[in-house]
Structures are given as structure tokens and as C-alpha cells.
Length: 313
Image: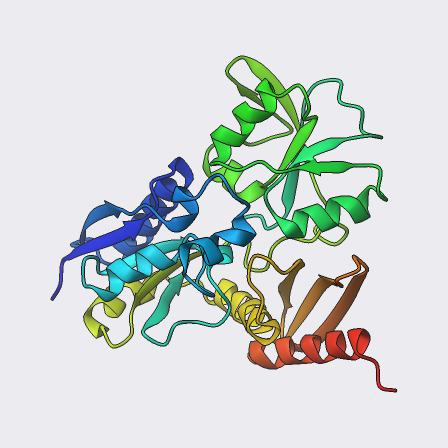
């Protein structure tokens, strides 16, 4: 039986932390496994001078996730046995050469607003590289807040906030903050204390699959899958299956302003989503279905969205 796994990941502090979590989950079921972490620089890490939504075109990676394509190339070449991803970075339409063999238990899914002391909350200037967050910021603050493009890993963006004379705050995923130990309603970076406000997941919806970590393998590599599959969290898997199916139906990538999440309540799954029209108008949908049929729940939400944006004449 295979006992050594070469695990591909990005080199950021958060990516490495998530990889450590994946290794711990795998070893909890297979203590004999030894892990070798292989750091891979992705197109999203290389092209830091342009917005994320333009990286695919610049790098020629088509509809691949900008933080995924290089890692999948290494996986296809056999340079690694599996890969650890933030699931929200992965496109909804999977490459048939690969499969997700496990999804770890999900962290908090909502976004967090990080603010400087004394920030004027009525006229905020917020940093983000996400088209989803840009549209949500405009809607949530009714046009009184403006955005500035800002990229980098978590600590880089926090330091850019502190050093900037223009920025009042930034928006980050609470899951990433938690995993880096930046918990609570305030954090201190380089001696500067910033306040942290958790945003409502309904009024400021998260990215689809936010807070979930996926372990990806080559399709047909049954030996690797057998080691990884026991780490899978079934409830998380059901929710992200619905969310990824919704993304796939929309054929959405990081340039499409869409958000949402699925939740479980016994035998029922509820999916909520928001989609921004080209004119900036938000369209919200909610759909309820059976827990064990996540793709059908996604299809129901998608049908409602299509009906709302393309009403029958």
C-alpha cells in the first residue's frame, strides 16, 4: 500500500496551513502515511499586477481557476499525488482528468470587514480584488462606499491596509482569518489594532464554496483516493456539490459576480444565491430540496434565476 503522498499546494501561509489540516485529517485515518509538501507557484501568484478576473486571459489558462491550473498540471504530470485547494478557487465545471477525493469539514463561510480605528463607516473606501465583493459593497452600502483594487495573501493585504492613506478597510474570508489564528472582533498586525466585523451571510453573501478545503486526485488513481477518501466530511460535501453544480450551470468564473451557499436541515437542503446583472442589479433566489439530491437543488435555484433574469414574454 502507498504510504507516501506528495501533496501540491500554493506557498502562501494560509495555503500551507490548509495543507497541514489536510495532512492531519488523512493521517487520522491512515497514521502510516508520510506527506511531502510540494509548493507550486500558480498563475494567480505570478500575475499580481492585474485584477484576478483578467489572469486567465493573460496566462492562457482559459476557464481554469487562476490558483488551480499550475497545480493541476503538476498533478497530471505525476509530479504530485494529490493537491489541496480552497474549493472556492476551483471552477464549477471539473476537469474530467481529476476528481475531488475529500472535502474537509467546513469553516465559517461568511466574509469579515476589517477596519482601521476611526474609519468613517458612512463613506468607506474598501480594498478588494473580487468582483463579487465589489458589487456587494456597492449594494450593501447603497453606493456610499467605494472600492480600490488590492491583492496579496492575507497578511500582505492587512499590511497594505495599515500602510495606505486611502483605505479604510478590506474584506476577507473569515475562514482564512480563523485558520491563521486571527480570531475575534479585533486583530493586531505589526502593533496596529484593527476591528473585525462579521458580515451577515444573507445580506453580504459569501463566494460559493467559501470555507471549504478540497483534496484533488487524478481520476483513476484508486490507491491515492483510498488514503484520502476517509477524510471526507459528508455534510460539507453535500453542500459544496450543490454550490459547484450551480457554478457549473452558470458557467461562472471569477469574473462573474455571483455568491451564495447551501445549508442542511435534516432531510432538506436550502440554497440561497445572488447574481448581479450587467447593469449591477442584484437578483436573489432561494430554493429548497432534498438533502441527498444536491445537484437537483442547484438546478432548481438555477431555474429560478433564469426565470428572474430572462422572464417569459
